[in-house]
Every structure is written in C-alpha cells, then in structure tokens.
Amino acid sequence: MYKYIQKVKEKNESARKRVLAKWMFVSVFVVVGAWALTVSSRFNNSIVAKNEVEDNSPKPFVLFKDSISSTYKNVLASVGNIEDLKDIKREIKGEEKMIELIPVEYNN
Image (cartoon, rainbow, N blue to C red; front, side, top):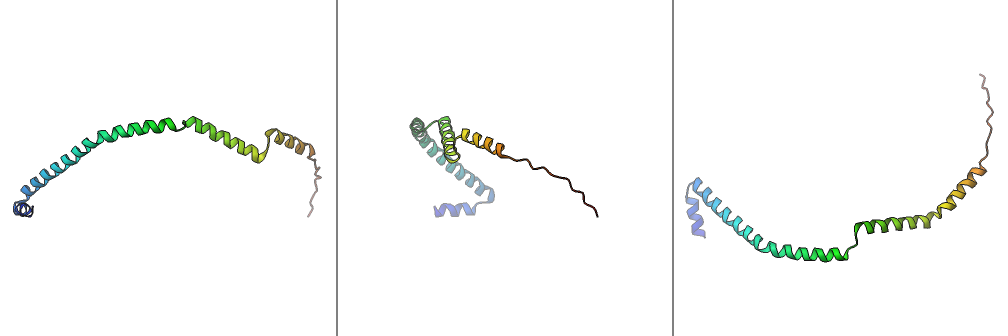
C-alpha cells in the first residue's frame, strides 16, 4: 500500500484527483452495498416490533379521555361538588349589604 501511495504522489495533480475519485466511488459503493444487504432485515424486524408495540399500547383518545377524567376527579376532590359551590355563591350574594354613600362637599 505504501508503494502505491508513493506512486500516486509522484503523478501530476489531475491524475491524483482521478485516483481519489475512483477510491471514493469504490468506498461509496461498498457502504451502499452493505447498507442494502442489512436494510431488509432491519426493516422486517422493525415492522414486527412495531406491530407488537401497537397491539399492547393504549390508543391516543383513550389516554386523552382518561387524562380528562382523572383531572376532573382531582378537581372535584380538591374543590368539592359544583352544586355546593353554587349554593355558597347564593349565600354570599344574600349576605351582601348595601352601603349608602353621602356626598360631602369640600370647601377651601
């Protein structure tokens, strides 16, 4: 390999660029070939794994419904029943008192 590199170094620039382009093409071809050989097995395994995961995972709308339901239950536990709140508002409004204001003139 060392002798080959020395021969390439002795050539002019355009010849070195051609050698570089050939080696890049070969390298890309090897990488794409290796990828093509392994992609089918990866793709088939991922489809099988994805189907298994989908069968066991809950659906998005079920998760959303459960989330809303648990949030509502937590609010009820913290605040109390909504009907009780309406009764409290009625009691507060009934106890409001009206204060009459008497206008006062200010003279300098």
